Structures are given as structure tokens and as C-alpha cells.
Length: 173
Image (cartoon, rainbow, N blue to C red; front, side, top):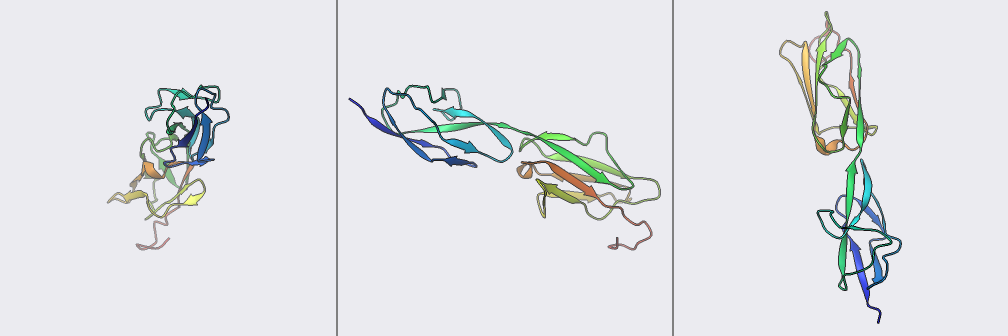
């Protein structure tokens, strides 16, 4: 006899369509839900949270009770571009990073005769960040560090370091 089982999809931090599916015990799962997450590539559905037992449309339904399938994700590599004028980007500053896998730590040095600006612009996926980063200008105004928190990194990152007029008084550009 057929036993219908409701399968739910875990949905933390991503979108799933549809959110549930009714399957028949001892039959194949068939077409599974579509999952999307910004900054990641979907890598399949699994019957366990550690993503060891993959479930595909051709997998047989062996659990006769309601159960949840879990998405596996692969972090995409995001490019980091630096747009600067009269500023040199430190050699150790990254040009790519995996989504959410680590903070971006960049260093800058002003060219001779110039100073570092009071702030920078940071865009992720074209959206200007108003928080999620820390920019610190050195006491000599000739160097600076930038840390962008990993939680904000899910798309391409652009850092704009504007030119700072060395003859301007503090706060003027």
C-alpha cells in the first residue's frame, strides 16, 4: 500500500520553491525544490544536516515519516576591486575571497605628497555599505587599513579610495 509522506526543505538563509513536497514511501522523490542563496552555488539536497546522504530525484523514499531535506552550498568566489587615486594598495590586500568565509583585510599607503582620505566607499554587489567595515587612517595620514566583515561579503566587492587634498584642512576633500 502507498504511504504519502510530507517532505519539508530546511530554509535557513536561503529561498526554496516550493517549501514542501508530498512523496510516496518506496517511490522516487521525483522533481525536488529549487533553492537559491546570494553568493553561493546550490550543491544538492541531503537527508542530514551534515550533508553526507544526498537525495536526488532518483532517490527512493525510505523514510515513512515526515522529514526534512537540507541544502548543501558551495561559496562563490567574489572579486575585490580597488579604485584609487594617489594611493597604493598593499601587496597583501586580497583581490578575491569566498562568500562569508573571512573578513577582507586591506592596507593602503598614500603616494608621496598625498595623504589618506578620512573615509572610503565600500560597495558589495553595487550596494554602498554604511556599516560592516572599519576604515582606520594612520596617525601619519600616510597609511590606512580596511576591514570588511565577512557577513557582508556575498557579491563582488568594490573599494573606492578617493583622492585626499593634502592642502585641505581636516574634514575637507
